[in-house]
Length: 77
Image (cartoon, rainbow, N blue to C red; front, side, top):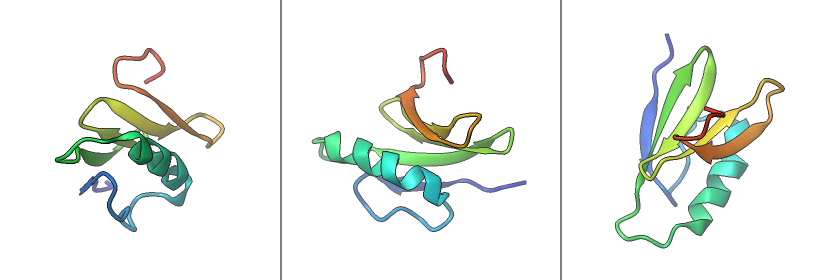
């Protein structure tokens, strides 16, 4: 079992978040101009990391291991 974590967008990405997600998480964070900043939640789904922002943005890995960004209500997640 893998444990998830939470952190505030725009802050340091925790070490437990896979490096493959960092660039896309950073790109999403740069688009947010809200104060207070929303929080990210890292979970694991079928062995893959899923980072979900409180606004519904999701960063995950596709079947090839490439980081992708979507919305929680997309059919891609």
